[in-house]
Length: 483
Ligand SMILES: C[S@@+](CC[C@H](N)C(=O)[O-])C[C@H]1O[C@@H](n2cnc3c(N)ncnc32)[C@H](O)[C@@H]1O
Image (cartoon, rainbow, N blue to C red; front, top):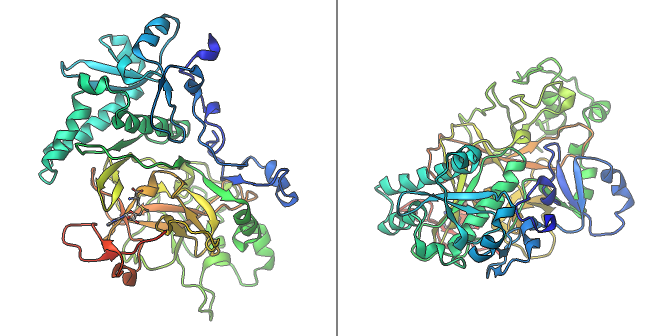
């Protein structure tokens, strides 16, 4: 019986690409077997996980052999589930795990379960259920609070308001249609949240406030960068990969610690030295015009005079700085703290990322995760998902079209409220420096607002064969097409 148990989704079942330690810097996709000799030392480094393909394994309930087989085939989302009849035959044997809850049309608490399809949802009246499912109830409450805010929003269309009722007042018609796209949205929210939970990140929610739901995006979910083999060659030979000691041996100028640091251990913090040795414009040289962004004691960046066209870098502490994991200079290492949601917008934008709670100017929002690949591979890809690594590794980009996290949904804004910032960050100075990019708020962002970045240059926004920019009503720019 144990082999059939559908409710076990432990961190172990979220294997490749979802390592359960926060010190992981990335996943190396090594196509060769055995791995190249120059990568042999990486196999022994716990900050790098090795694999041959990047997968989102389907958690244990797929092994159930249950009769319901979903029409939708999405990475990491089980297709086989139990129907109400199947559950009736088994339920005495198991402690089923709650997936999410809704309020039904009689104002009762309705629960769907992991590994069951929607026909098997149950009304839960018992106080023990509430006590034992605080996390599930909390996420459902946050989702419902957002949906109720749409009902009050004077700018929301009637169609959007009507669609919120699908979630806020769960009807029998939807419960009896397990193939409905609605349930795929719910599964994406649940299984991607599951990956977040392993790393203490907030839940995420996918929504589509339309009469007819559109197919949600199909991609593999990761909260670590996935590095291609050739990109790893570039990383290992880059100057930025050298340790502070190595860099110091060849650095001729006198190092000053003139810039303050918010590090918990200001006297031993190495970040300012790294800035001088790696990225600071050298006197007399016109090569780099990089700007150094440093966090204050609350981990926020100073965004006054921030210009999106500047090259800028954040340097995070490593263990050689002598600080702890809660140091204000380790925001990206700690990861997202603000809850975000992904919502379908319109036929131009498709899906976009929105804040589910207020974010203050200068705060870290989320890391931009994806496939670290060569900028020039010769293979066509959707470059609108590319983020350049101009300072850390100019030959590489992070592309999130097929593998990424929720940041891949950020829409373009001609007056953006967030910015991408290259981040030099690793937990140990001897780990490979997998390039990272972080998203920070340029302005205060209200709950419910879109998180937007500018990913087009001024001249690209007038593209001839493009399509209209929908960043805000009245925008007259056009966006280029990429693929
Ligand atoms: C990085 S993707 C963003 C995520 C994408 N919307 C999705 O659903 O997967 C960039 C693409 O989103 C669309 N997009 C983003 N911002 C837009 C805007 N302001 N106006 C129109 N389309 C936009 C364009 O199709 C663009 O090529």
